[in-house]
Length: 312
Ligand code: ZN
Image (cartoon, rainbow, N blue to C red; front, side, top):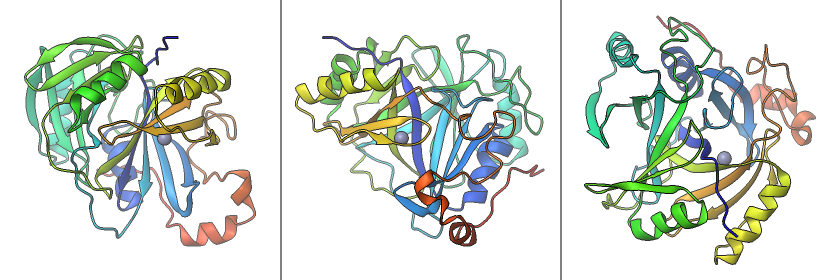
């Protein structure tokens, strides 16, 4: 049996102060805060989801907010860089916008594409690349309009000290197609239009450490519950230990760790973000899964309120 993921479902990272996180991703980058909830494994801390207007798979970046915790270290066994894709012609807009917010950036090139690289306030490495593919994002905020808005994830760069083994998992288990090599990068591509380009960087940076400014895991797409169970037995047959299915309310998740140490999740496209609040207002209110609803008052007292606001 050969299986193929469509590409990235979401990337989840750790940050510090949640309002700083919202100010950056919603107000500077213009993404939609599609869900404000808590970490189901750590209910006194936020789990914030950002994406396009509907929070489609392939557009999502999510954050565990750990205010007051010392920063982690970006290194081997982590997603090193998360890439965003913007419409062709939008790069100058983003250079100007980063200048306006006094965010420094560098411009680099690989595989014939130009990348604008910068960091979020907590040190997470990000980049912006122009591409034709991917539907425009209709969510506009604070001067970011549809013609320049981030369409979603362009992909990610995986930092692995065991790049051959990591490439084997990405190509032979997840089913992405090898595009080629350039310098110390190995590039793969999936069939989706977003979250589709995966680069593996075959240079050791020293072992990464979890904490704010670091990606926690990367999730790959699967269509539905039954296909997810096929993935579970397929990955187990290749020798990896896979977790039981976990209900994350907006998708179901299974996890395994690839040989380079990066935590891989396989997440269902369904049910998405508009099943427990309306598409029009989602992201505004704190949403809790059923098991924590009885503790809403206590949790609302512990969690510092956060809001999407204009910051300029
Ligand atoms: Zn996840």
